[in-house]
Image 1 (tube, helix red, strand yellow):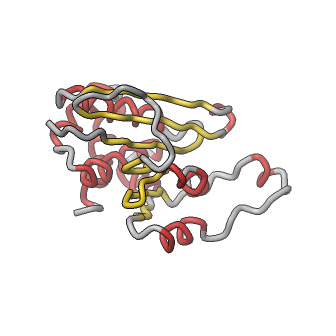
Image 2 (cartoon, one colour; image 1 turned 45 degrees about the horizontal axis):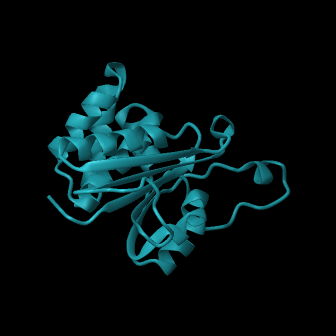
Length: 194
């Protein structure tokens, strides 16, 4: 068992599966015998607002909150949300970004413009940035809502969680009617970092 605490920041907007993802990661950590703390922030989630989950696990974890500059990985379900939370990433941390655009209210109202190529700008600043079309992969697996589990597959590879442990957690957490699609999405995600 590792002594250091692993910090995973999961960011997106309402309806993208950030909370389900944090539950899967927490379940895996429990299965592996780690102490786990989870914190969730829902900002107008039902209206496409920002949703953030923080998962911390290790031999002993004292706080559920990830401090700025301490996230090992940011798992971003939407491009602008990735940019919004970058100051939480460790200098040598990794960002996995779903290449999906969800217009926030100021963009929809025409007050501001969505930043062009925001994900490419992030990648130019941070060498450990991976950009993926997880939504497209989820559609090919059979359900657009499985994009979060494609990202879970990538996360599993990035932080070295055995696939069988993650599959066990997915089976525990995901409803039976969506399980087959989600397990396929997870496997596709794992392939992306191999």
